[in-house]
Amino acid sequence: MKTRGFACTSARAPLAPFSFERRAPRADDVVMEILYCGVCHSDLHWSRNDWGWTVFPAIPGHEIVGRVIEIGFKVKKYRIGDHVAVGCMVDSCQQCDQCLKGEEQLCREGNTGTYGGFDRFTKEHTLGGYSKHIVVREEFVLRVPEKLDLARAAPLLCAGITTWSPLKTWKAGPGSRVGVIGLGGLGHMAVKLAVGLGAHVTVLSRTPDKAADAQALGAHALLVSSDADAMAKAANGFDLIIDTVPVKHDLNPYMPLLDVDGTLVIVGQIGPLAEPSTVPLVLGRRRIAGSPIGGIRETQEMLDFCAEKNILPECEMIRMDEINHAFERMEKSDVRYRFVIDMASLEVA
Ligand SMILES: [Zn+2]
Ligand SMILES: [Zn+2]
Image (cartoon, rainbow, N blue to C red):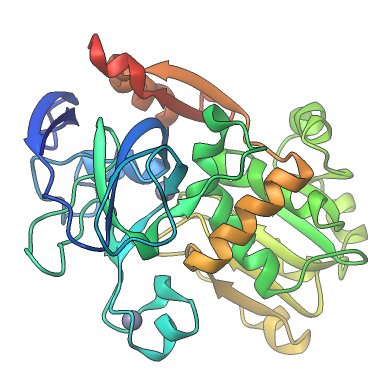
């Protein structure tokens, strides 16, 4: 099927209008009209080939919310008109131990990325959500609960699940003490979700000027990491610290904050770290861990939880043709806290 989107044709080219074909739906496919798409930091990295494996022309976007407009004859869960969503993956082997556990993000064969992946049948390069339509197999389509505001739900599909998954893995809830480093797209969701789960939540920031923002998001405290006294007093005070900082940084100041068996989990950065010391790790039986997105079942759980608790990302809506400017602003961390593209604007772009 013919459709349109915004693509970049090289690492230096801005995103621009682009016409292309989506595959004809297979028996188990859902065809979606995309209504909203969130703008993730990965979209920027992918468009500019920062990781070195971008295939051009590239269409980013993996926080997708839309409406079903067509279904394959074997599709059971969805009907035309349903509000649905797609996150960072559109397929996996469906047979390995991880897939069978519902941890498709950890598929032994690698999951198929919503963009930058390769279709398991046609081997075509996958193209993301900065477009009018997308075709996705039923198993990777999520249901958007009726109570959830469609326009603001999109960032849950990457920023939401990426912070929800470690909160669930390390059992955050009433009585647990959660710290969040970095207050961007991921960090602000980590705060809201951890608060929703009943944890005591502290934002860790280099400067005190984040206090009002942290409080507005529902955090219970702010710990200023450049304040040596405050950091010393907070030693052993956390069960889980979610580190959402997207650039190379030093973990050493944070390790003493973890209690025995506490975990610092990295969700924001892919690349080298400054050298961590093993002393606080070994002596305090502390852990440094990593965590990607979650599985499909877990993502649905998170969407249902957000609907029930009325937890929504803070979004700044943009038109499709404002995307290049939005990327520039994201690079300066000038967004509170996630851009979302209103895909209706693609008609006029
Ligand atoms: Zn993302
Ligand atoms: Zn698998």
